[in-house]
Each structure stands twice: as C-alpha cells, then as structure tokens.
Image (tube, rainbow, N blue to C red; front, side, top):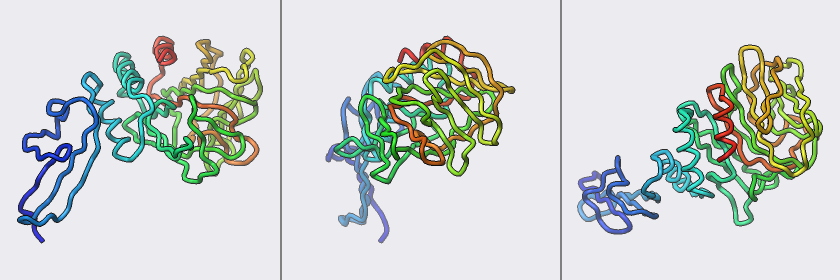
Length: 290
C-alpha cells in the first residue's frame, strides 16, 4: 500500500512546523515523544516513535548523546556531568581527538538491581562496552564495580597507537588483577601488579614493563595515564610522572578481566578514555578535576 500522507506528532499532538535539524529551537526543555506516522488516506500504515530530552544550554554533543542513550532504552546517570565533560574537552581542543570514553556517570543500560549490560561511549566511535551474560555483569555503584570473580565488559579494540593517551580512574580491593586485557591474547594487559607496581604489556608478546610507584591504597581512587610515544609509554599516576618504558601497542577489548582466568579485577572503574593525542599535564589535570 502506498503512502500519501505523513503526520508528525510531538507529545501526541500533530506538529507541522518541527525542524528535525534544530529541535532545540522548536521544543521546550524536558522530555518529549516524537512520532512519525505514515498513512494511505485514513489508514495508518506504519509509525515510528523516538523519545528525546531537550535542555537549553547543553552542548549539541550532550543532547545527541542523551537522545542516543534514551532511544536505546538506556539512561544517563548524570546529564549535567556529561555536559561538563564535553564542555571541558571542547575548551581543551581535545574533543575531536576523543576515541573512547566510558564513565560511571554516563549512559548505562542496567536492570533494577543496577547490573550493567551496556555502557555508552561518549565519543563518536560509539564503542559501547557490553555484557549480556547476567552472572558476568558488573554493578553500578558510584563506580562500575567488578566482583573479582567473573565480571567483565567487552568492547571493540581500544588501541594505544603512537601519539595516543590512555586514561583510567579506578579503585582496587586487591592487587595482581587486570584492568584491561584482550580476547584470545595472553600478552595484552594493564594492571596493578602489587601495591607499588603498575605493569603493562602490548599484544605482540613484547616484554612486560613495570613502574614502581608509591603505595596504592585499597579503596582509594587513582588517576592513571599512559602517554605513548614512538618508543614506549610514559606513566602518570595521580598527577606524577614515573618516566617512559619501551612497549608496543595494545588492542584492549576486555575491561575488568584478562584472556585467562585468575586475574579478574576486584574493584571499581569510574572512567576509561582514549585520546588520539599526547595529553599535556594541564589537560590531564583538567580531566582529573571533572
């Protein structure tokens, strides 16, 4: 049956003037339901509905992210915080270089008990980590909490090429547990090996490298950056540089676990991000302060 009429409704009322390219100018702040109906005469053939949220003053990226999450039946934990992230990255001229950002205050798809099946990437990569197996789902608290037994999230590769910066904010309940790993590869990992040692290895089987750091306190939040040059990685932990170590690229696609058992992360991960630039200490500090 052919379509000879399209009707657009906003919150159940027909709207003939809505501009889909500039929803902010035509809608009030708050949640709205947009429905597009296709008719043949008086007969309804099909309809599509989308839920959106409009907040005046939010960055366009924030509105787009909120709408993407809501359309997928997820929820954004702290919309104002997400907007602050976008604003800061724009101010630092780093938003265009953002390759990945998972955040406990960002978008989540979770059940009534806060077990997470999807975490929504803030970058345009749309690399949303997922876990469909209920027993392996981490739980959302103030952080994304991994139980140290079998919890993990899976993503497309988070690749630390030359010129990138990998950032993790985490707290741990034990040591020798993997923050990041790679499916099918026992060589790729990033973890707190001991309370005074951070270890990292690329996925080509190169030698593991380690940095000696001040004692990491159980349960305390830590901000960790790996800035990759053509020769290796420089570690920054809680605002202090611990020098460069030679290591190759890693293509991480497991968050909170490792390719083999026995190294499951036990603790909370608040943020993981990847930038296609070597962040300066000023930019690092701006991110830490978010």
